[in-house]
Image (cartoon, rainbow, N blue to C red; front, side):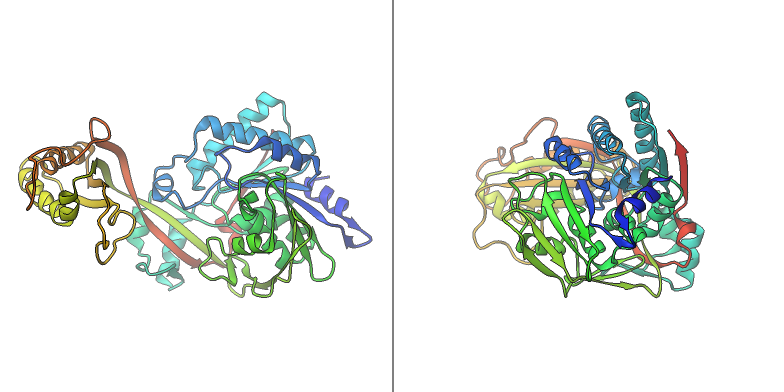
Length: 469
């Protein structure tokens, strides 16, 4: 009997579904799994274990480069922990967005680790993998048919954007995970996926109401982040099918308590709309949700509604290389220099461009950020009172690393000695945190796709492969 059918038999009695226990092992695998809380969760005998591995939060570099965001050693350790835990109680393990960004290079890296761990640990199971790389011809056809729209105030996607993307992925929903489980998988490792799909696919297969199931998935996907004080410890969600459905959240760390306020606040996490969560297969409505304190540690949630989509959609993400990056880093505590920094930096840039015109023949871009004044946000006006010290970061992007470093080096020297009104000293207006103050960071990427595409054939976009280990 395959894992999903075994689970169906376990939770079904006389056509009535018993409460389903779901263990969220980690908000993002690869950053460490607190083992005391995880082991406590395993002791509660969850029906399956889930964990997400990725996010778009780290920016376009990891997607574009194909590199995983976490260290190999930590990632391998976390994978070992959750694999051991799931196999010790013989329950499915579901992992989404492998290797941070979920493209084939990330998925292949994680799959190789899992195969090594299985061999070293003597673990045997059926492993399903799900690719999330978007067929580029299909995306281009969708663009030509007007079936792709931007997410937010960004330009429309073009066919040249598709061609420029080093990696192009789509976010799968519950459908792909359900196909993998129906194919007999004990462990599912997916490319780019909706966080909720990791936790809602199995409840949806078993017949639990999708409103509470999706809402539970939304809450538990970051483990104990929905508690006070928020943390990364394992979180147990218990889904009840009775009535219109409800679920209980219970952190496996006793110092973290779920309250109506902390759980409701997490319903808004990463959402532009506080009342609706849009998924490939439909929309979760949480405006009717109710939050009830069960005791000091646990909260019960009910009332969310699920609206199936009349048109499936897939969020697509792409990253394209824009060049090589170098940084010039410095601090400043000279009040006169700080007050004049808005004028100093463009003036230095002008000088640098003139001086490097013959030696750096390729095009390059320069970006200035002054942390303490406008490093995080481009404020329309300076602060009423200038800070006593600031940190200056000058970013150079060129086609080659040598060119980027050359510009950064010249910029450093002329910024160090730039004359400005009121200057007292010809040097010492900057402090370098280390030497050299120019840092070559490697390839720079931009998001080339952050759009939603209509899709009629989800299985064609997210192929499943199954192997026995």
